[in-house]
Amino acid sequence: MDSALISERGRKELALEHCRRVNAGDVEALLELYGDDVAFADPVGWERRTGRDALRAHFEEAFAAGLREVPGEPTAAQDGAHAFIPITATMDYLPLGPVFAERGWLVPPADPAGKRLRRNSMLLLRVDETGLIREAQVFWGKSDIEVID
Image 1 (cartoon, one colour):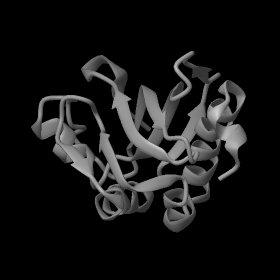
Image 2: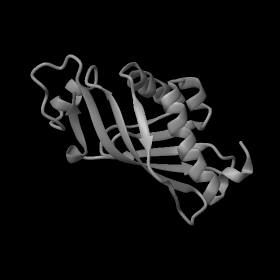
Image 3: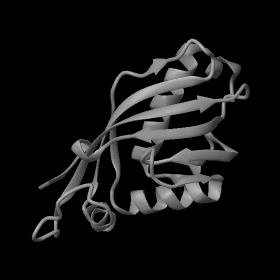
Image 4: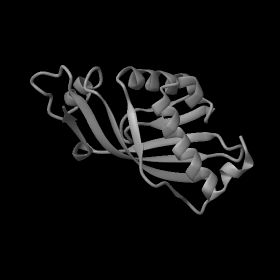
């Protein structure tokens, strides 16, 4: 990775590139942005996982549900390591919707066929000196997710 990714502008671009690669649906291209020992939580407060294999499984499941992300304007911290970006994500209700409903995060629809989920979240990334993402935390709560047609 280019050393410019450590700059504020570079970290903002990295956050946007994350969203572009999510929308391309290419897990391997997305994983190129992450270190082998990446730690992540989606959402924060749920299980924290580590490693590219765990991240691959997380995104393969989301991509299978048709995940799409619309990024907002990213912000970079003055610490040289963090970037924060608002994201509105949509995906098919199945297969993850029932898991979210079971946890009490949303009310399940009577007929889940054709339904989608919309979630507003904030993605916090920690980037190392090589420009790789070492930590990703997604912040969202019950009031940030809904079932849509």
